[in-house]
Length: 131
Image (tube, rainbow, N blue to C red; front, side):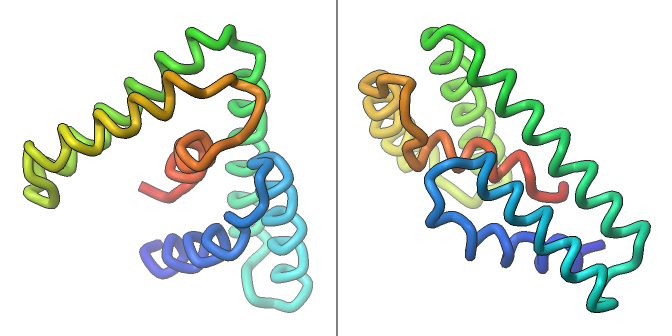
């Protein structure tokens, strides 16, 4: 499973230049179909990947329906959780986490909700990764 997660993460990195996370995920779905036809993944694995992609697309569409204040609250909560986890794992100091949080809070607060800035894309892509 770890190799699959690394492979999926690599595909995500290639696709991140695209601004719309739904288009990125749809592209990944097409690539998964090509990988299946090329014999690089099993039918079961392709189905699992495509199911996860469909779930993520559904989550993004639900996120898009939220009022701007709710979107911001969700992004901030996710960011705080990720930073807290990194501090607990000793991957980040408390000071650095606070610095990152402050910077990202400013970006999130300034966001108009109409685009897909990096912090929004990262939210969706991180959720896509295998845990």
